[in-house]
Length: 385
Image: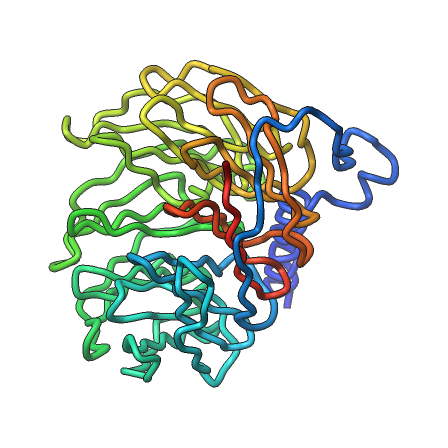
């Protein structure tokens, strides 16, 4: 009985940490204005942002949902079980299907197979006409969008196991597990398939590269190590998606560090800096961009990790991870605004409200602009000029 009580207490604690880190705890905001969301200010707009199209795709949103762009199509899912394919240029819904159960993550696609996942570990795959191909079970709950490519559907479950299923048959191809910490955040995380390697961040502050064909671990890099005396203090999850820029692989952790590794030199660490993020990062050829746990947006030199600029005008507005478009860096916030910042100096360039409440899903950079999955279950394309 005592062990059960301790377990319940620890689960409560980690959700308390997540609530404070990800949503801005109201008990602080009532007594300490430092934790209140910054008021939006007026400034001369330097870019024009407009809504190009909006498509209703289902109901609700959550951290495990992110639209996946493949060519001229967008694949997306919502917690109520809807799975859709939408034309990137127009927002026309090309097909829509139902998974038949509530979903916890999705969608991942390579344009031939589209996969989603449910809280009980069910993984469901559809063909490119929206017809179900197969369904199978992962070892536990999946709250990270599946990664699809190189002939596999890869999922990472809450028992810290990464599994790959054959994209055509659903048969298990391989499974990799690493020891995990007692507590972990539930926030925006994504995996990436690049050149037949699956890159996944782990709750222990590490990034792992797995061969998609064999499941052999090709490389592991440590972004940060856990610090502190308690399980809460030692949470150091890699958040967001690992980011590639040329030979560099970059990642950021909560209560840890941000850094880049040179994969052409065997994954040698190029630089790291102390940092804490709850959402993730983005890169371009010059900078690595990240939002910290207080929602200051920071640009680091991709060469040596030195600060290039910091923008705190959006503090405590529960920002998404940044995405890079040619004109700016974009972040979403708790009121459904998409903000655009200068890549050179971080100044605010413009904003647009897309509605639907807080933006929980990661923004997606596309050739047309910034794709937003809103809290109310819409896909919105924001064009920037």
